[in-house]
Length: 492
Image (cartoon, rainbow, N blue to C red; front, top):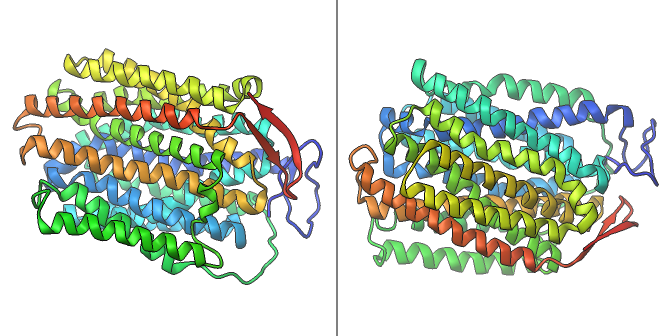
């Protein structure tokens, strides 16, 4: 394992039976984690701005939410499996596997010949992303103390800020001057660079013991969530909401979720341990993460298309407007450590939630009379709020457990965010598709503007629900070392 660095237990320069981490290598490892995170960040910001171009080439406007949903679904359901593996066989092999799958999915997406093919290959990308993002954050939790973690997370979050400029710029250039296929091919050098840095600088030893992966639980969770997303996206589109396929998909999805819970209770090593959701801190942090997921995907999915349809701006311009979201995020995330060390995790998250509510309300108002400046400003405010919500709530959850449970806890939190995104984009897609009645934004921009305005108003409700989840967080959390020894309290 990677020993958590702390003042009480400094990292040594020799290998121990429990693992090794070198203080002199924390810098290169942080760079490796930033490059690794860049895989996900670049992909998200490029794709969001290129959707109109992809739809124009491949068709299928009503199907384009699947580009996000299937990616987020496979990412979400694979996170608990990867997180369990990371706690048993080590972080390094799992994150390298994720990079390999992400590379394969990117190449396949670049050669996609139809919307169904592109959707299928996005699922492969999602399987890779399910390992990359949570394990990178878990490694950061291993090698940095609770006081250092916010700064490290700020550096990692800054990747999103850089990507928010580089991604839309590349996406706009590729969409306007080359072809959308290059938004996936650009991942190839990033994957190779990330893998090389991790192989060279990340060292760990793990005590090898036999473990049983909960494949039954993983299959039930994947199938259940697939059915629920299918019902949300296709209801009112491929079939009526109260038709047999719609009701059947919802009902079967719920039944399989119940079966999943029963299997997890009896599994020796459950893929998603239910104790994670029985602890007040971990449950409230997961609910906050669900809200973050819905808000993030709702904004990144529809702001570019909204601006391009109603203001007739280029993909590059709409992407740079959206970039304000991911510029505000790392700025506030990097400073959140000072705030939560002074006033506590709960108060910090509540302050961030209040900023997010103000930002989403501003976005809903700006959508009624759209302008680039108003939408960009609202996105920046939302990003600044999310930076005070996402990182502190996750660090609070990580800090309450030791090394052997940190991967599972991190995975559960990011699983919640991914499922929030997957279900959020499905629900918002169902809302907009229902109002559009099969028309594309180009055919009826006024109706599309009304539909997106309604969806942005729904995000205000989600932001308020996130406030309620944050208010349920306990006031005190404890940092544990690798042996489970309390290192100190951070209290409100």
